[in-house]
Image (cartoon, rainbow, N blue to C red; front, side, top):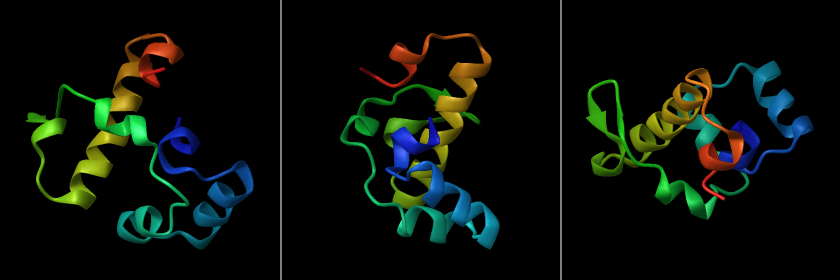
Amino acid sequence: MICWLTGYDEQGLQAQITKDVDYETFFREAPEINPNAEKIKGVICGHRVEEIAEPLMQKIRWLDKLVDELAKGKSMDKILRE
């Protein structure tokens, strides 16, 4: 799910984890945000993700929303907006 959103492969994701980067660096260095990320809609932490104006916070909340949907048992094809 994280790789889908950010474009990291397993090795690139592990490198970011090993470097213990912050969210800003993690998303800035992401190979490519998935174009379907714009389809992520709904409420997370009391905010509609599609209405968040600050780009970094929106990316963070996109990731939160994906994880939340997985935790609620939603199927991966629906979570990944395929």
